[in-house]
Length: 307
Image (tube, rainbow, N blue to C red; front, top):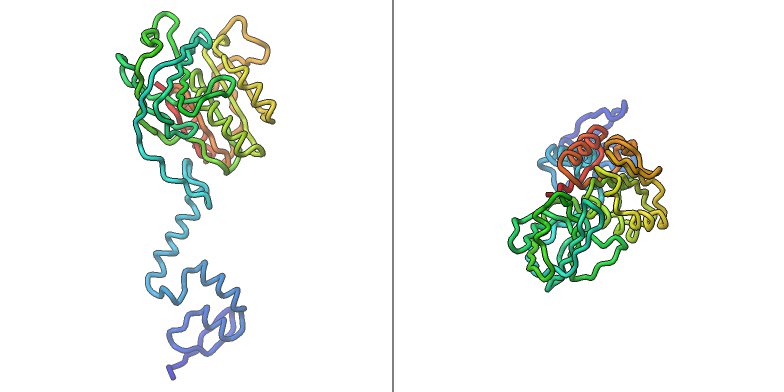
């Protein structure tokens, strides 16, 4: 029989064997119930199965508990799946359509289905042009075949290399690239799109309405000119599915419709919360400004910067 000693637990003196923990002493004296002891034992990391190295597991547990509060961190209990492997898809340009003065829609039909989630980017090379980082999307009405890649590309009205793209032109996709893809669950979904950045935001928004129809969503869309707000049909569909917070804004435009606000996109965002999940797509200046606003309140932000 081992030596015994006195130990004070919660102001009460108890006799225990040397080497017993305070938790075991309280359990032996009936001060706590066995199930309560198991729960406390689990939280404290003091189980018999691993008597050594008690402090490091506790530190790891504290770190894991704090991690969800960091911007861009996975949601607790919803660990992110590993990204799909990078793959190459080839095809040809099958459709070219001018959506507005500053945006062109290009559809490529691929030999195999692309392995990209909504919001993912890819390195896209049209034969004869430099590679671009683009994000596949859907047509404005939401249509897309499983072996198609639809792109919304910003174009300079005074002349642009995109004018060299022709039907039947070979195209090559390599991806996924980036971490701006849609993630189900975890707070209000705040979607911010600048110019052609509406492409990936539209793909995320439509997927979210099908997968999580009850999830709260707020959408802010901006363009330099009111004439470049080409996504009216898409926004009408989102309103019909229950998205009530949709804001349109433009920096300029003499013929600005009454529902289009004046000024920069960042001036018309909803008040962000720490529990929000923000996806922002567009030029690097807009994306960076939204990232700063999200970080100021501790919201997770997933950027999509377009070439």
